[in-house]
Length: 388
Image (cartoon, rainbow, N blue to C red; front, side, top):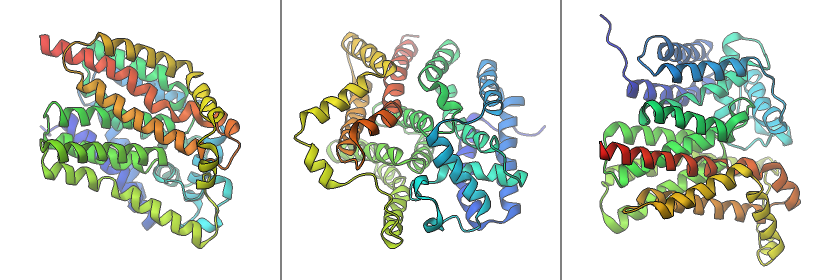
């Protein structure tokens, strides 16, 4: 009888195959690309057909996949940035030939999403509008598996319902914001478990390490979130000494790929005069003392009904919570830091502030919205486990 892969081996294998796609596409050897996509699809089928995974969870993944296969992409960001980049990676052998990329695709944005999606298109060897969406959907698999391991039975169903309610179309529209949100949620839960629950098993540290690398290479918002998480580990180590230097070292190392990419992309920006920047310090200085700018940002954030609902529910449960509030405080600290950085970026935008907010505000706050509501469920789940 062949030994079966356990959940943890499956999760780590998915993460490794995602990161391996960077090497396979850069090398541009057909056989490596075929093996990469074949292994990923085989692992997905193994999860659905052989592994003893919750049946509802399997159905959830199948339904999401079918919707992706039966819908086209209409949003501007998805078509003109992420899926168009996938098309470039499909046709070009030198994927770092950024000076030839159209300016509207933002050549120096993090690349992992479209690059990973391109291996599935390259496997079929012809371009199709649906194939890239399948690749982007497959990126949801590792964090969803981890959530299915973290929550059990009815709590799992509640978690998946909340994730679907908050993210909705972001499972299907080819944008990166849904991925950023769910990867951040996993990193936040793992950070709490490692720091406050002292549950620092090797597999959790490895998953957090891999999860951080993936999220940081999806979009610059992911880079910001990973730097915030790394900072929390650093200051907790500095002031409490209650986590090992080995853990801190791995978390810090997980930020390096995105920092290297940021420096490299900035170098390319200057070298080839790409002007791929939407922000400037002058704009920040000019807007920092303008109350109307702050009010406008606040108005766009609270006009998102899901964000507002999650915030109200979170505040209610925060004050209702008795005893330790480490989980809530960690969530507040992480999200406040992220929110402050978002405000700074909006104040420094080169575009008209209202236009920029209308085109992106409801997307970039998805990580906050999802984490606020799911962390409440996670807290209830932990209390139930403790009482049993």
